[in-house]
Length: 337
Ligand code: PHE
View 1 (cartoon, rainbow, N blue to C red):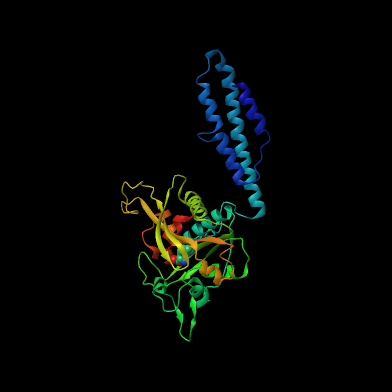
View 2 (cartoon, protein in one colour):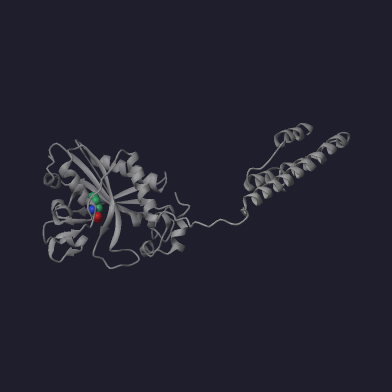
């Protein structure tokens, strides 16, 4: 014990605090309830009687010294304060710290995962022409498939639309980039939908595109499995259900296993699966439309709604919450990521 007492003496010798915070550190470390001094007094109770006299004396001396150092430190700070005419005990002006929006958090996380898989990020316009949103992607004019993605048109020029998906950026990339292409397209999209708990007329997507010689459905599956496990946890399983999109063949919807394991929860409605994205092999016709030779290249594409992924990840019940700017909602994400 005497060694410990001496050590504290050495480390505190000549202590003069440069700031109130340092003085407080000193108090916490040595003099507070859980401080080193109290620790030593506790230890003192356990030593043999023959040592008590000598150790007790040193310990009391140490206590007095530490208290004196603290008081002296306090006086010196007060002196400095008065000399500078400043009251350092006044609270500062608080600066309200914002936090990232949950959609930004999830969007960044998705981009991060695909970046690590070797995808780069592509951007494009939100106000588009019919070719990039629909025609190049195999939606013929007046075809019922267009009803899947009803959009906002400009009255004076029906050729100009708000993009309904970021697949329009895929078309732009394919038109001007020779393969191999491995890119994701994050961004805001618009659909003419009634606003409800489940859908909104403005939302965000991340779509992805991989085009190279001999890209197969197995590549698609493995890439999406890797993504799902990064996003939802390492034990996540995926399931692909046949589906239809005009621009992919074959097409599928991907579900991820629900963390309840199918035992029963509100989120997956007792099915054990949650639908997260659409995907498929790029239709050869779409490649042709973008001047890529389908004999030489094949590719896969996928697209997901960021609001939906965030909804599942944070178990948010109503998509409208994202756009209401209620700080009580937004504040809950200050700790996330
Ligand atoms: N563009 C589709 C949508 O918005 C999603 C998708 C992208 C599906 C790529 C398949 C392949 O619904």
